[in-house]
Length: 185
Image 1 (cartoon, helix red, strand yellow):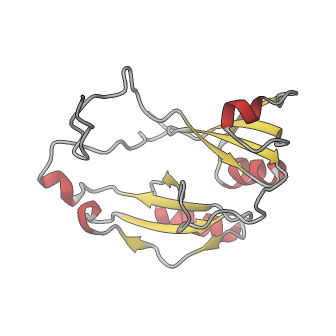
Image 2 (image 1 turned 30 degrees about the vertical axis):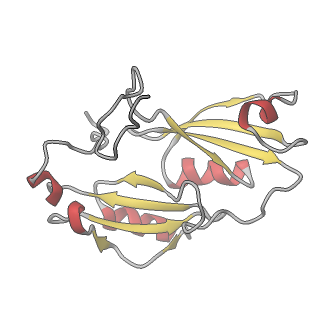
């Protein structure tokens, strides 16, 4: 019997893995979410896809019977992963967005060059800002490395993060975390 991979990255890798292509987010109102991602964050709307007309979401995604995809939009986020927005109808759908303490994907982080300017921009657009900006802690620490959490109008937690300096962990490791390249390159 094969040994399971360890937390240190030893073991087998997914064949052909390149990286994260996109993050899918179910939103309560596709128009509101699109406006936020395009008009406030600056993402680009690439296309809208016709929702399936059959019961395929149940088979493909494992959602409850009677669930329907109402709308799908695909966005480009500068030099990072793409974002796919879904609006669903489901007979047992929760009205509130999962909290960061709930099991599942906790937040979406976007890299920004100027954290203060980005936070001020979101504040001007009425986006709720949590406390901060805060220095990145522990292994992520470095001169000017900071973050702040925000919340979209429908409750998704979004982190603004910037780490212009090397992180502390880099002193002890050759591994480097991926970071988006500047948009002008």
